[in-house]
Image (cartoon, rainbow, N blue to C red; front, side):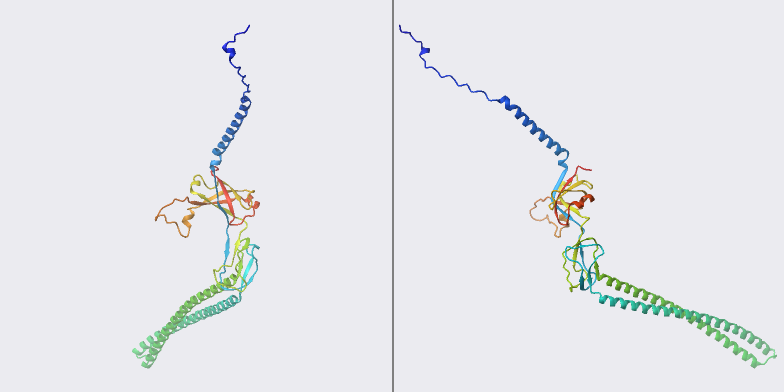
Length: 367
């Protein structure tokens, strides 16, 4: 007996679905959360560091080592006789480095010395004349006193003879003789008085001549001092400790006052001039800590501090200052020089030279 199949049974059999295992989200989620937490922590740490310190750090690579570089020039004219140093040689302060031919200057010293002796002799002669004139004045004074006494006697004698002549007790001739003697005595007194006045006047003349001679002696001594100074200037010495650089002087060359010879570059006492942008100076002040990175030794940073800020931007001190009142204007951020002094205990770490490039960072949050 045939079995009747239902419609459901007549449908073709459907294949069973493949069972795919669910992804292991539960195993990756902790790692994702851990990574996110680490990233947030690192970002927070950097943010905290920026807020606490980094936002106060101002840096510039427009910074160079500076120093008191001293160019040397002669103070007198002449031919170079000797050069006692070479390029890049170390010299000490006071060391003789160049000698100019000093023969003309020695002759000038001898000439000035002879002039001093001549003027001094003239002064001594005048002083001797003054001493003699004082003696003559004393002599004239004594002569005047003697003649005054004689004149007094002759005057009294003339009066007596006049009285005697009037009473006929004496002769008229004796009265006239006494009167004449009295006149001669008075004339002699006048002559002596005039001689004394002339002697005193001559003393005044001699004193004036002594003043002039004294001034002449001082002038001659000043000329001698100048000649000795010029002789000393023929020896050019190093003003500071340092290294010889850019030597242009040659033996036999004629040099004039002010002409360039060479340069002494210091090895110590150097600093850094860092040119910061104007928008970096808001909190910058003297005494703030600074770090200097040199290209010559980038792995050895040097500690220092801000010693001073420039009084104006670099453009103000340029030979041709900017003129912004004509044409189109383009704003350019200006820079101000900031002097960085390297701490004394840091200078020995790197052999610095003026002109070396550096990178400077200043902590404007430091006080």
